Length: 371
Image 1 (cartoon, rainbow, N blue to C red):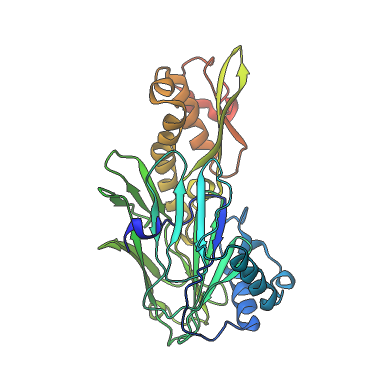
Image 2 (image 1 turned 135 degrees about the horizontal axis):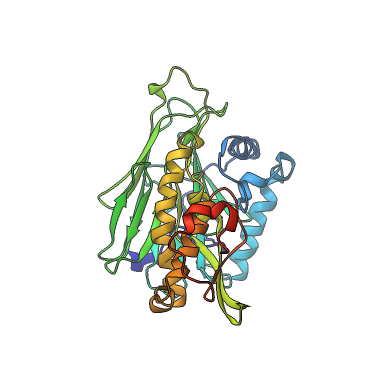
């Protein structure tokens, strides 16, 4: 699909827009309430990440048992009130606006704030997906033939797509065509994570290391790659002794590592530059964006991404000259990157009034980035 056709982008912000297509479509068998509840309960069980901000990961089975008739009713009322409108926009956040359409043939859409670098992801075209069921910040789809369930969920700073393989006869390879700005290039790190940058070197999107789990929570071999404009995840259960279906696979994409940038604070009468990690930024930083089996490697790569792509976000927000004309700012930032991977750590505050300290790493455990 062309970018101009649907603006497209995989949900890279914390704001979700549910969009419902009104074009006539061949009737398909609806996903049963039992299938939906079973699928979402399994997703809850096996998703390995820190769950802050994740709708599907935080729901109780009781809350997930709300009837699908009520959910579909809410979609219908939105459609009726919008007449012939095909998409519905919420207010923008400081990171942009996200659209997930109930029509599986329409790509997920993200319109980032302050840039024209819209990026899109199309659900696998070889699946015969039903119209989606709206679940607050997520939409669930089911393949009418294989029973594969795909959920698209907005999380703070990124978006997650869970793909649930019903049994051994289900497809085990899924390709998501991406609509990227012209001139976009990509780099894949050793842990499998991928960073997309535009012609000017600005980050367009990132992909976390792939993971897959069986119904018992056991890791299943999987890999993700980008080729010919498509992101492909392959799940390989035959590489392990035994697995228990269903299997959950998790393409996870994001863009904004930080949010809530501001200069409202002062220290020693000088400005303080502040920002807070998004959910996506935290998962990348502490290595939990992929399977925990790769946690150590994820932390190492996360350190590199935060030092480079993360710092680029600060320079873009506050100005490159402002952030580089005094060494202490990057020194303080690097200190936060080194020591703050294991928790949210609240605001990262870079105080202009602090002295330069090229040896900050020797006693970071004592000064905690406040020398």
